[in-house]
Structure formats: structure tokens, C-alpha cells
Image 1 (cartoon, rainbow, N blue to C red):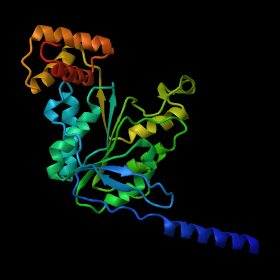
Image 2 (cartoon, helix red, strand yellow; image 1 turned 45 degrees about the horizontal axis):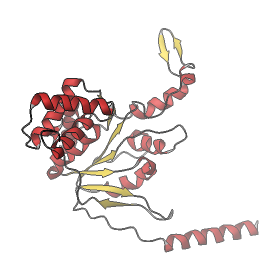
Image 3 (cartoon, rainbow, N blue to C red; image 1 turned 180 degrees about the vertical axis):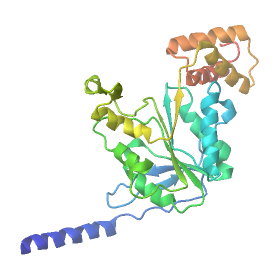
Image 4 (cartoon, rainbow, N blue to C red; image 1 turned 60 degrees about the horizontal axis):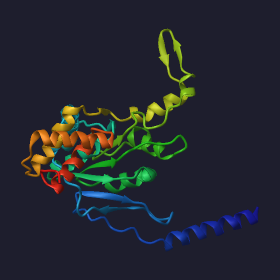
Length: 289
């Protein structure tokens, strides 16, 4: 027993020594409007918020063909800035349809109103409690931005996210929301054998426990917005918009044909592909050479 106590005291002393030798956490420069969470290299240290000197600036008016989604998320963000009821947001759906760009555009529009954004990689979501503690007493309004969020069945980061969304004993801070984008509606993979365990009771469908667990995370986002693939005319409208923004006087017929060929080669008519076409067309000149 004495040997066990001695070993415990030695272990505690070594842990305290390691903590004292850990590098100090850099102070946060609160003059920035956008931050990136940097985890500590030493397990005994705490991560920090690194200011982003040149955040990606996008105007909300440049986002076309997603008017409904844009209006809903803009409304929710304004409520948040006005200190009224606002929800965490999940933007899910097809790739290249403006999910991430929409969140960045909100920062560009509302930074002067006190909106701030913190980018967190999904592998660092276990640090969410540290982020909450860091910003809880700040006067700004923070959106934690998680891009392309999805989890595999054996990942633990989603448990930390669930706790911050609603599941922890402590109340979430008034000045922080989570906006996440994903190609998956339920953020976790769903397998056929899991659905086979579902059953119907008195005419109602009861999901299996595995499915319930996977649905429970996305349901903690109070506001869902779905993004769908663009049709051909929407794709062309977006491509022409970016060309017009660049001041290019183009021949509509020629540009339309080139834009469709570009999309065919890429196998997609997304907004991202339309922007990439306009960028290339501008660089080559209006004649496409």
C-alpha cells in the first residue's frame, strides 16, 4: 500500500512538473474578425485562437440561386446579433452549392455589427469546451464554423459537439453559435443492416438504436438548410454573373457554349464550377483563347 501511495505521489509530481514546463498559451488578439483554433502541441497545454489576417471576403449578393437558404440563415444571424433567439445551423447537401461561402459572406456583411468567426477543424472538436471558456465573457458574437463536417462511426469528436450543442450540464454561452456544413444530413454514415433493426409499432416507425444515435447529433442543430444541385440555367446564370462582375463584355452564345462544355468536362454544374469557368474565361480573354 505504501508503495502504491509513493508511486501516486511521484506520478502527481511528474504531472505538475510537465504542466509547469508546458509553453505558455499565446494571448488572443481580439482585434481580428476571424480566428482559427490552434490545438496545443503539448497535451498539458491549452490551445489558442489565432487571428486570420486576411479572411476570405464574399458578398452575400454574389450568391445566386439559393435565395431561400440565404434568407433563412441571414435572418437567424441577425437575431443572434440582436441578442434574440437564434439556432445553431446545419447546412447540408450537394457539393459546390454555396454552403461554406454563405457562412463566410455573413462575416463580411456583419463584422462591423460585432460578428466574429472561429474556424475549427473536426479533429479538434474535442477542444470545444476550451473555446467556449475562452469567449464566454467577450462582448462580441461568435460563430464557430465547421466546414465539411462528417464523422466515421469510431470518431469521438461528435460527442464533444453534441455536448456543446445541447447535451452538457452547463448552459451554452449566449454569445456563441455553431454553423456547420456537410454533404451528409445526419453527419454519420448509415448502413443497411442498421435500418433492418427498425420496426413499426402501432403504425409508427421506430428507428433502431444505431440510427437514433446518428440522427441525434444533427437534430441538435435547430435550423437545417438543404442545398440541391443547380440545373443548367442556374449554372449559366451564376457563370454569367461572375463574368459580369469581372467586367467582361462577352458574346452570350459563345460563352454559353463554352460554359456548358466546361461543366461537361468537370461532370458538375455547381456554383463552384461556374466560378472556376468564369475565372478561366477571364484569364484567357473573352474569345476563350
